[in-house]
Image (cartoon, rainbow, N blue to C red):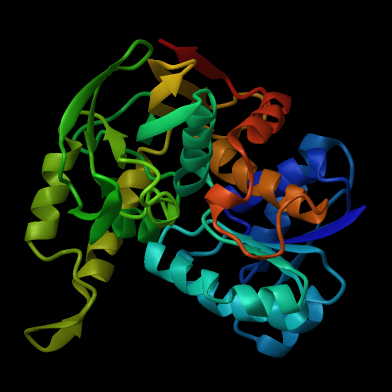
Length: 385
């Protein structure tokens, strides 16, 4: 039996705790949050869905160092569901307390710094695994699954997106995770592979339209961080590696305009007699608009690998669509994000992931993930043409 703690008891944290309760062989699951009411609501919801008291809850300020160190004593795995910018600090806490760690990541430069702590994690006999979740995370894992269908993979393309099932204008989008993570995805550059070498591509580049049978026409564009460290791992091994985010038509035009206005800038500016961060102000105005549209959702993912099988050119495609679950109340985004992280936390607890600081593409094969995904009724289809 294993002992887990989930830091951050919001949407994704609750989904993580629920999956741990179902599949984690857990003797203890703690839901921690700086807001005690949020932690209690999360724990109560999970216990109600499971029909047993399998989780507990605590109020926890992660920057109260003495407190968090005391809480982590004797736990097997810490899962960070707090915003990405806390994860470097939490990595140091995990190493100090000899607690394995999984996080939802989303910021490639941060992740690369975490992976530099490999020797420290090895010395403590623990695993540090950043960038689990939907993307980066499950999209990388399903990319591996597509490549594993071939004898040789030369090119890999990935598309993924979480969308409201019934979009409302003018945004045609709902916020299914922390808004800091959303703007982080839309700012900076993505790292891909082109002709086998690292290629830095600005966000919102590579616009294309893609048809999905169950959804219709979607627009795809480059966003940052989607592939995590996979480009460095596969540099010289794959000729092409790229990832794009899917949205309903019209979304990207608005985001490009906001960025050009400077609303993504974090550095404070002076205005009349005050100063403020444009990004914070942008979040203050936009977040209520996107949460008011918070509705049933759908998540789409497609990975396409090209290469050789039995000596002939082949294309391997993996497609998956997930929808809001009316029985549990979990959104598709929560299931894909939370349950991917939970699956990896469970694998770590069982000793099935290497020790050290491990990148997501080296943590679990696509084939092994598929076995776990089927237990959770993920609809994943594989085709080879």
